[in-house]
Image (cartoon, rainbow, N blue to C red; front, side, top):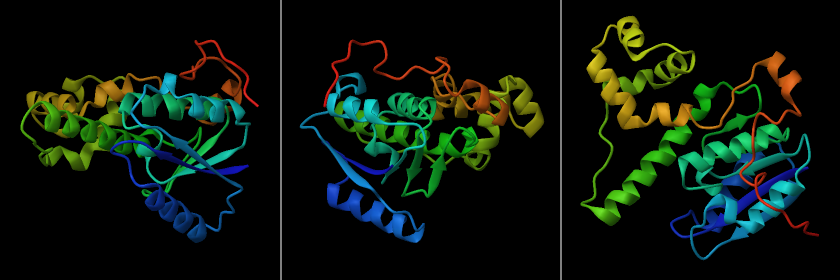
Length: 221
């Protein structure tokens, strides 16, 4: 089953815009959408409290696929984005992100996902600045071009000092960049990147926990 998933929530992209983005993507990729699912919410709630979304996730089956316009259609928070992607992967569900033309499954390199999670995090910080203090914006860094490489090296267990030496850059500057982009925070989330062997072995493991699995569920028809 292929789902087009859209969410109406404050500060989120309009449903009409989400639909247009998804349909355009599906058309160019020659994907036939089986069902549209729309989540309505008058305010932002933690993912664990979004009953419509929980019901949808619980209904998913292995090999289902979901298309969203942007990652923020699932959540405006980076840590929740990590949980939701992880949840989909643990259930054998693949995800298409139309705006960035990214296809996420168990074999997708984490380097392709991190930039989208970082965009969520930066948007979250921008909203906080707008509410709590004068509005600002993320400044460009010369390290942005090496973002994926830095993230991959951190993920492999290399220290900041070792990465700085390998890239021939200042350790202090690199540490400031990693902190400002929240790379370690994203990597320390629940997302698990699996190679082919791991994917085959861990399909039904409980190593990856969905946001709802520690709560009491009511079966919905």
